[in-house]
Image 1: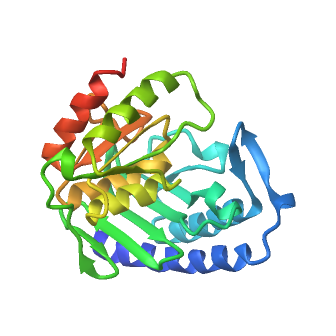
Image 2: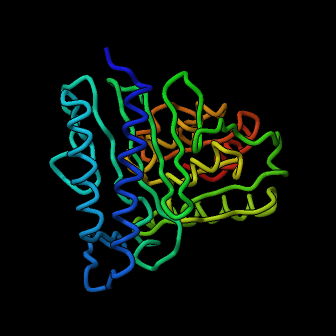
Length: 266
């Protein structure tokens, strides 16, 4: 019988250890280490080595689990195992490369098709957000909850800008234009995992983005759910982990956001 509580404590510990490695490497990081996986899709040895360190430790903690990870193509196909770790070793690589202090480690555990454990470690602020299914959400040992705001007009909304797929730019800009007039502001931090963690702890009222991968959202989505929020695709269907788009918010704001997005998103 797996103890998710004990497992979560171990994952928090390993995330902090790898976070120290990432910060240390950033001190001497040079642009010559940058690789391009695709248009504006950057990676470096730091991402790769961080992922190796994380996966090695996770394999020791739960040997029967498979992996879905960002930097190893062999780990991007779901196996027939009951458990899978979903890992982004450095969410916010572009920020890291440009020395902007917003990037995180994201680790989730999926049982069959359900996320049951999630950890997002924002390295620069040394804030570790974590949750297990039906166990609440926490940051650095303190309970966190979504914002108490109930209206879009009182909300600060986070999003992510397209960086390699621009086929829906017109619709996306229409949504942004609408939200600029209906909210207290829009923010783009450059890390979906951090955006979701900030929704969970009430710093943002909502987050939406499209063209995402499972490792971007799996851990953060559980944080939002366990903090009392609602998560789904733009049309509210539930396959947000693998569905490439996500909307996360307090339930009333979720409905308002969904109405705005639905006017333009086809």
